[in-house]
Amino acid sequence: LSAQQLTSACLSHLQKKNPESFFMMIEGGNIDWAAHGNDGATVIKEVLDFQKAIDVAYQFYLQHPEETLIVVTADHETGGVAVGYNGHEVGADRPVRLTFSTKGHSGTIVPVFAYGRGAEEFSGVMKNIDIPARIEALIYDKKGNMR
Image 1 (spheres, helix red, strand yellow):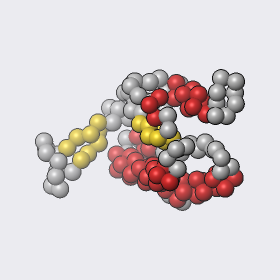
Image 2 (cartoon, helix red, strand yellow):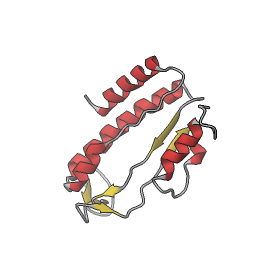
Image 3 (cartoon, one colour):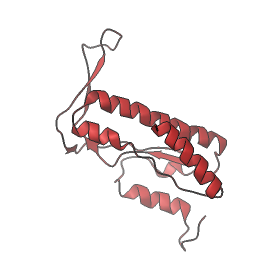
Image 4 (cartoon, helix red, strand yellow):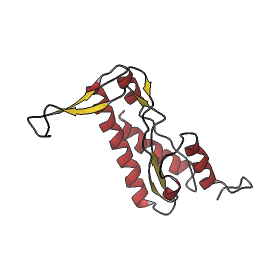
């Protein structure tokens, strides 16, 4: 199954199991594996597949805007990926290409995108360990009760 199909099936299942609240994490893990292998074509394919999963989540958000938060990020960058072009302008005759500087993890800062209820908690440069703490703070009050 594609990430899009899995996301849709998981949302449907979780909504039936616990319609009041649930947490779901979607990982585009094949992006990391492809970048470790410096396989630019697969990185692009997997990012596009992940984008389709994000779109399913966004469509869910549109139906449940008051109680949905979408956070998109990565735990690290892999491959030292740089986007290049065959020339100076992008066009049909000048395709995009990826170049790599390593097969390992780099120190490149990864973006954090958030949309929906509580999105304002995810801005600026953040440590990746702060992201789950902020999600937890949005779900539970200081006494550990669900909001």
